[in-house]
Amino acid sequence: MLPHMKEPEAGTIERWAWDYILCDTLDAKLAPKAAPSCLEADAPVRRLVAPGRPPELRVVRKAEKSRGMAAPSGRARALHTFLHHELQAAELMAWAVLAFPETPALFRTGLVRIAHDEIRHMRLYQGELTRLGHTYGDFGVRDWFWARIPESVDPAAFVAVMGLGVESANLEHTARYASLFRAAGDEQGARVQEIIGREEIAHVRFGVRWFEFFRSGLSFESWCQALPPPLTPLLMRGKPLHREARRRAGQPDPFLDELDRWQPESPGS
Image (cartoon, rainbow, N blue to C red; front, side):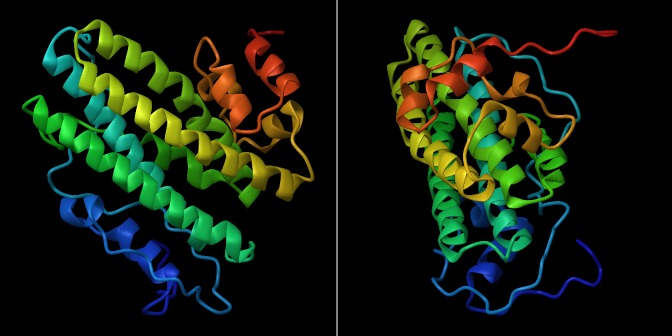
């Protein structure tokens, strides 16, 4: 953290967000106390640069290769990755509460509500890991979200990369992995993916709503311009697009058509 940063007042949402990001035990990450309802008056900008990490988690620079979905260990490795994505999402919702104190109270309390959803998703994945004979920490983790999302210069950039980016892509990823788990004969694992995928729709809708608020509307071009470099739409979608879920989340067809067509520029073009 920055050395001059003032800690939030006790009993505030900001203090809850601060403590959640910086806590370094698995119990505190997986089952924090519920956030209070009071926002700090005249809160300053606080941009934490890294989360606390429990000693059980081994942070690696490169993703470890999966062994496929047929073996329980392969499914466990995938679930472990998803659980850590949910942790980072929860932490970064809390990060945005601290980083953008000038935003409407409804935006910041909505971020906290989503953070609690992500924490509940973590526990769903933890239960699935236990069923497959593993636990959180058995595999290496990447803090990829933390390497990119704090580059968001304003709240529009944050919702562009979170709600309209990684959470939107999760609509495709959860559908894909539900099919893979089901094909492996793991119906329970498939259902968990489907539950989380359905609940992500509301998170994406939140991102759409607030991007439209911060940027006076949503277009594919305005979204691309808001993404923190070097992020591009390439990492913000699965193939094929889960158009039904994205439409339910408020993404219009012209936006989806451009997202589907988008290709990175070739070198020298």
